[in-house]
Image (tube, rainbow, N blue to C red; front, side):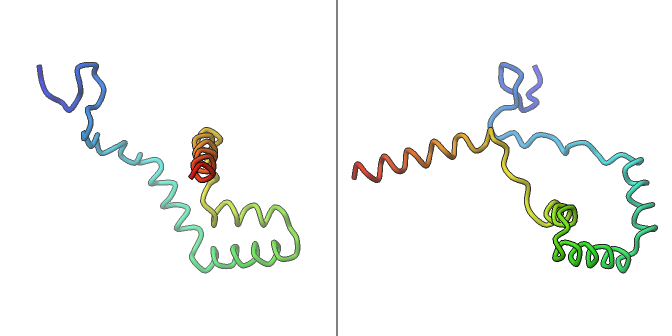
Length: 97
């Protein structure tokens, strides 16, 4: 049997770095190249400046667009559950001490 970094159940064993991941598709590269050729950095700066000005005037869509590109994504509800339980556990521990 060949040792390919998997355990007896076929899962990756602890410490296995995995593979390099999926290589980028040529189609994706072509679209990104076409986009970067069509929209210069000066064009993009103008677009962003307009979005900032519109957001300051109260445009909710401009605020949402800027937030989407500037802020990290919110954690999923599945990730918040363990955190909520951990905070409660810390409160219980703190009051018991």
